[in-house]
Length: 198
Ligand SMILES: CC(C)(COP(=O)(O)OP(=O)(O)OC[C@H]1O[C@@H](n2cnc3c(N)ncnc32)[C@H](O)[C@@H]1OP(=O)(O)O)[C@@H](O)C(=O)NCCC(=O)NCCS
View 1: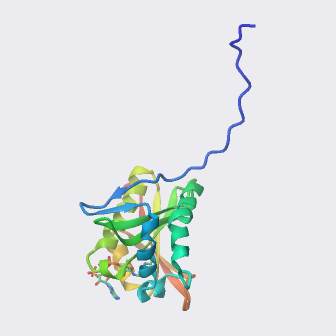
View 2 (view 1 turned 135 degrees about the horizontal axis):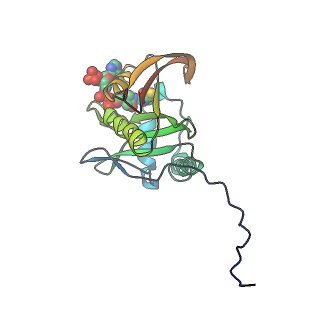
View 3 (view 1 turned 90 degrees about the horizontal axis):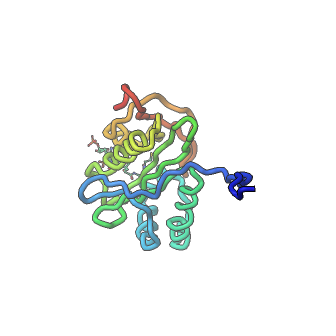
């Protein structure tokens, strides 16, 4: 016995593929970052905005305790599970909005992106820049093949964002979504990897 014989292999744990907790720069003043607990009051103020309520079925009421839990444990458990990534759209350090990667399929290398902006940060192309940046990060840095947006057919501002961010309109998924007012059709937009990439 030399003492150098190979030991039996230790059982390996299955590894979860996940996106990193990255800070993703958009421009000199804007970055996509993790949320922090101090964002909770601004988050509560933003999600009571009627335009956000109109299109996104968020919990009602939305107490600050729920926001505090979501910005800490909720967002991180999404990331750790490998199913998505939630980022705060931060302008000069302030919460301007939220953008997230969801429905990640690591085998197909596809994902969907969703977003909203607090009212005071709209009207200056910020959502388009954030969506373009995050989708490019997925396609270029993480080798995704397809990034999708699904936008309620009546949501004109969000359709403009999709177009300005370089997404191609593919069609309408009928009765595919819901808002607080009921069922909606969802327009499907995509950016893809490769030569057809926009
Ligand atoms: C969608 C949203 C993120 C757009 O934010 P934004 O960066 O401020 O977008 P802009 O204000 O630059 O508007 C984009 C375009 O929509 C138009 N627009 C804005 N509000 C509009 C409205 N209420 N009705 C029609 N068009 C509108 C703008 O004129 C602009 O058009 P342009 O590109 O021709 O100039 C923001 O309105 C929002 O948070 N809405 C509520 C949540 C939501 O709908 N999220 C998306 C779910 S898919």
